[in-house]
Image (cartoon, rainbow, N blue to C red; front, side, top):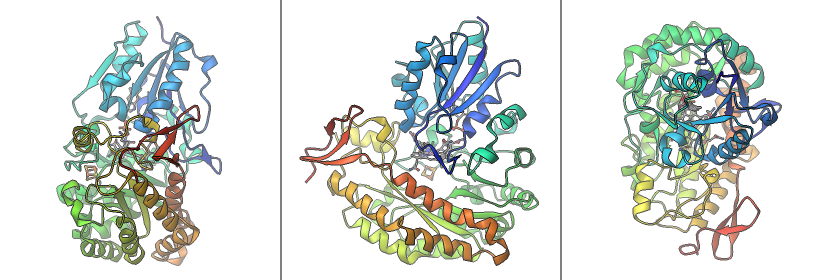
Amino acid sequence: MSIRKVVLIQPGRDGTFLRKGTMAPYTLMRLASLVPDSVDVEIIDEDLKAVPFDQLGPDDLVGITAKTLQIDRARWIAERAQARGAKVVIGGTHATLAPEEVSTWADSIAVGEAYRTWPQMIADFDRGALQPSYVDTEWANLDNLLPISDRVLSQVDENRNYWTPYMELTRGCPRNCTFCTAIRVSGRVMRLRPVDQAVEEIERRRIKRFFLTDDNFGLNFRLYPEYMEELLRALSKLSLTGWTCQAEQLVADYPELLKLAKQAHMDKLFIGFESANPNNRRELGGKAKGNIERYREVIERIHAAGLGVVGLFVFGFDGDTPEIFQSTYDFIRTSGLDGVSITILTPYVGTPQRDKWIEEDRLMAHVPWSLYDTNHVTYHPAQMSAEQLARGYDWLAGKLYGVSGIATRGLRQLMRQPLRDWPRKAFNSFSTDFGYRLECNHRDWVSADDGIGYRTHNGALQSVAPALSQ
Ligand code: B12
Ligand code: SF4
């Protein structure tokens, strides 16, 4: 066999907003750059373009990336590509966390980072010997990442087709918060990209604003302060509109690095406060303790450096009662936060949280993976009913993502900038919360006679929480 084409697909869900995509296919851009120049490669983001199934054939290798919530759609795409004779490889978070399940329908699976195995898969397919599974268990040294190729850049045209490009600078997180999969998909040891290579990538991609894909960029303030200083000084020399990253509260203890980050054009930090309830502290990996006085101090210190703070909160821990929504809202209202993300605790495969709830028989049966999107209840909470959790979440989303909430926090962020910067900072100031508002609109639960239910694909009502709901 001689390979005709590699087609890499990111399953869609959200479509476009004002004709631009909301989720740039950074993962696929990296993978497409590993395809040899002699082989044709195409990236398809289903939010922008339908998969042209009629053009696929037996000499084509289809690679699909999928988080858990995308895996049902990935399977739908795979079945249609397979019907045309193409072979389908599934990689990404869900294939890494649940390889046995995915390998029942995929031709091949890529477990792990695939920097080593993906080129091997292409070569094996080319000689008609694609294996059912490829496991990349070593964490790749980020020193040697192949650059994103020019053919990929011109094909994706990220600055034109997407609102916010992504960029990876470091990877990994040694914490092990009970609900997070980071240590399994990114490793426990923080790995750092060389500063000169990161700068080269930003310049060659001509990106002026970006969101870092790093799980916990802020932890590097403590672990690698010298690297951070070198990196931030280098970024300060670039002409960037602004960038954002995920971090934890300890960044507030490094005022000099925060100042440098501001000079490096950082706009805001997404801080995982996770919960405003101290009863949940054991589940927060040691980085947050539900201590709202400390949260206020952290926000103040970051603001003092001229940076914004987006607070991330998760609901439905075993220590949470229905009062958690009002108390968190009271905190948020008075906290000075510049943006807020709220999510429902979701027991992903491979997390300590899921293991515990399987043992306690608290997972809901029949919930499709597509609803593992952090907007839906997928387990029986300890101190409230599933319906109370869903309704409380909806109530809080309504309070936070109404026009006045988004406008207040966006203006607060904008006011932190000098007037002359307002035109170029305006988008960044309002876009985060607006994005979360769209995200929260994915709501498929319905009140069933006996509790809470979800619509199945054929429209029937599947009750999932009869026993414990009130
Ligand atoms: C950036 C990011 C996002 C971006 C979107 C990026 C994108 N284009 O999908 C944003 C901020 C929008 C986002 C949103 C969400 N995210 Co997110 N996100 C990440 C993050 C931090 C980094 C992913 C990334 O781009 N890494 C850099 C690229 C280069 O690496 P990669 O994607 O891991 O891909 C490598 C391998 O996995 C492999 N690979 C991947 N796909 C394929 C395919 C093939 C064919 C092959 C061979 C190999 C392969 O090779 C790649 C190169 O090494 C991860 C955490 C993590 N460390 O993975 C969470 C993560 C993927 N997100 C997660 C979640 C839960 C979400 C949300 C549901 C959260 C929320 N409520 O907002 C939403 C869902 C949005 C949606 N509709 O999909 C979870 C997923 C858990 C799970 N089991 O599914 C993760 C793992 C975070 C976590 N700590 O648990 N996310
Ligand atoms: S600190 Fe953040 S990235 Fe690290 S394990 Fe906890 S939630 Fe995941």
